[in-house]
Image (cartoon, rainbow, N blue to C red):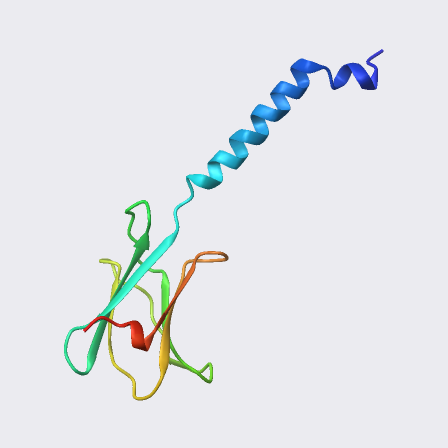
Length: 113
């Protein structure tokens, strides 16, 4: 019969510790969302989204939202991971949403000229 104390003997503890360290290390390899937006002229903005590992993000949601939470420009990144839109009047922000925990917000004041 297996005793409880023998189950947690040194080899089991080492294996459990190794498994835990592998799980923690895998989170360090996770890719984070990245996005940047720039004005192409006085009335147009182009945003490009992707991930920190260099991969693109075609089809990922990128919405332009007013400060009162109204979606001004609903969008998805194109095949080239970009979205170009007419710059709205007033204050707004851009939300690149690649899923839970993978969100980038860019305020209109941060758009490169």
